[in-house]
Image (cartoon, rainbow, N blue to C red):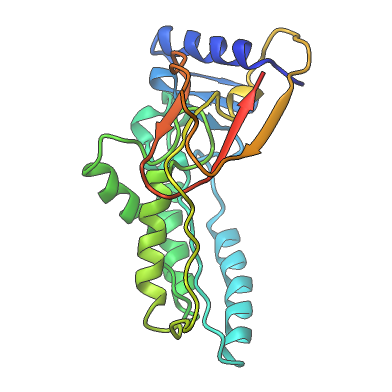
Length: 235
């Protein structure tokens, strides 16, 4: 189903302005203060034997690489629900097994010799020192702040085991950009039927001369870090 940007943002704004009581709507878990979570990342139930099975398969692959002297780093991103449990509704709280799942997976994957940073701990520490969220309020993805913190930590851990590149320089990504985005989870909320929206994506070496004021309830971020040269517009 296609929805226009205006309808999607209006729907999110109404959630943010509505009661704090949370509920589950199909594929979307509506949390406190308009926070949205994907229902397929169900933290109420989890199979720890299945976690061990999957980690065992991954460890087999890591050991195969190790036999030909190829180190492996695994970035295990914690779920948004795990990082922001205070925003979950009462009927969508983590079980004891779900809470223990991340630490279990980290320990199992490290057993193969892989480099596996503890992203849950890292993002929690970064959040404690920042007013900006590590995940978008209405999106499944982490913010530029969270992604940057993860990238720095991964680089720190892999640097001792990967030879430094010589004779090559990194690419400069340009200046900051400002994005206003309704969030991919908003698109999955029940919405009135609307005409298909038109979307365009363009590359820009410099920031746009003006930026639209954020719509209430929309995810909006500005960064002065050289993260992206892409700007997206939707009409």
